[in-house]
Length: 22
Image 1 (cartoon, rainbow, N blue to C red):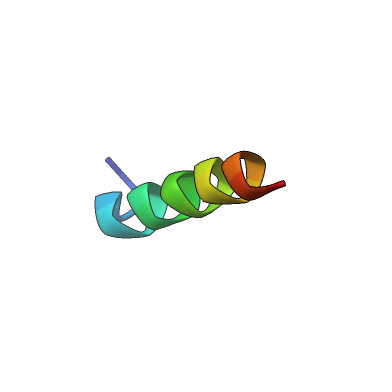
Image 2 (cartoon, one colour; image 1 turned 30 degrees about the vertical axis):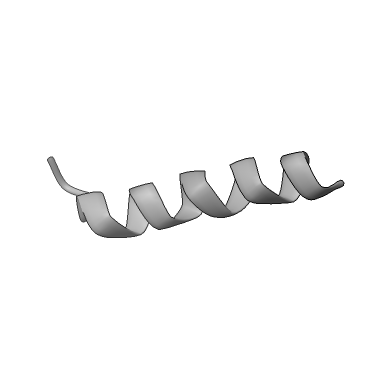
């Protein structure tokens, strides 16, 4: 994989949290 998995996970979690809190 080209993209670092930690960054991808962090972004995914951030988006999920934003949608949950929104």
